[in-house]
Image (cartoon, rainbow, N blue to C red; front, top):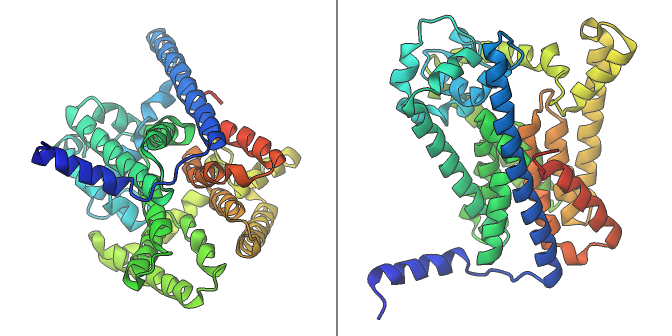
Length: 403
């Protein structure tokens, strides 16, 4: 006889994998290739990181400071937790994060409140503050909780959205946890995790037969956009189905919730003007535009202009050309995403666009490539040989940690 605990586990298992669609032999084969490659690549990277840290530690003792950038690992997580506890993140800390992106880390910040208070009156950079905070156990409780909760929700949402069977669910979950974009996102501790969570919930709910559930899905897309604005581009999935009124409601929700979100912080709507100023400074910062890990279209323009000019940062040409390029990318991508008949292509276009549009688009934005990757696996049997080869190589480039 089954115990009550066994019955409960069986029910939860059947609920999670109810409606699971079995994988074909070819789908299993390509999934296994990515599974072993990504897992093996991350293991090799871990060995390399250990050797790198040993070398950095030895260099530090010899007086070198070229490895000080290592102090900034987890810096986004520490910075956002710190500013979420400030009276006004936009006046005191000159933050450029949207209010909801700050508010979602407030529960984790409460765990580290005493630790952060210890360094409240010290004059330290974000990297220096991070290097001190990570020495306290409270930080690791908050960080592990953040990682476990976000990763679990993302994996469960993917399982439900793509109707994965149990074995394939485990493999996809491990790929998610060990792929390069997610490893980088963890290193930064960025709130982009929450943007992906709400985007996945939108994709899971927006086709539901129940109108109320669909509306919740629309609100999830809005919340994703309030954390990182670019996921709103996935609204093209509604436009391609001619759901014009739903798209209008999402636009109205976004504007309304955006202004209401300022009341989550001390100072309320008075934070709006300094937020806009800080965001403008962040987006036009030439150090960020020239960074090697910035994947945006604006960054590409900046780097190309740098080939022909010693000082592109002060050139009107930069503003004009970058604005024109971003506008063209947006309009061209929107038209393609709406009118393509291939769902896989629509996911590729939407994910690529949210990477290219923001002026500062670091490697962790590549976590949105998880969506076209899952479409690639699910539609693998229907794709032609050329498309299979091309996207297999491209996804390897995105997901392999050593690369």
